[in-house]
Length: 99
Image 1: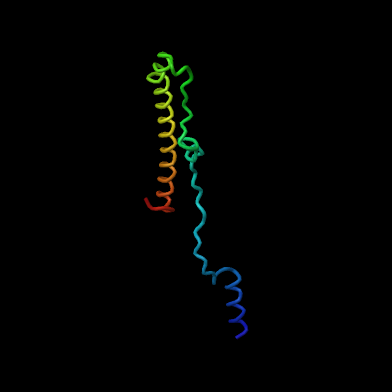
Image 2: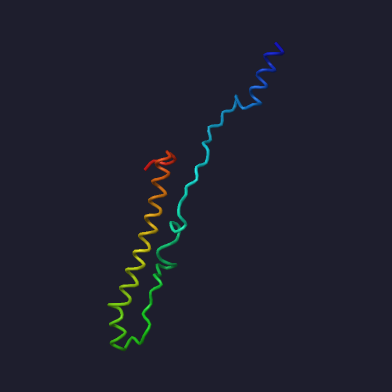
């Protein structure tokens, strides 16, 4: 009888009686750029028109320089979005999440 009780105690102490079903943590491996915002506080893009608003040349800049800067920002944001997408796909392949 003592041997049976001792065996049960040893099994419980070695973890055989554990009911823990917590899965092991899986590293997400998400690129840091995935967490950078596309726009700043208050939806600020950071693109500015510098010049005299009364000058025609300033308004010409809006069609050229400003649009180009905004297009570059959009491309950068899309790269960040793709980094997040790749991270989520890796987690899906490891059966950590379900897409």
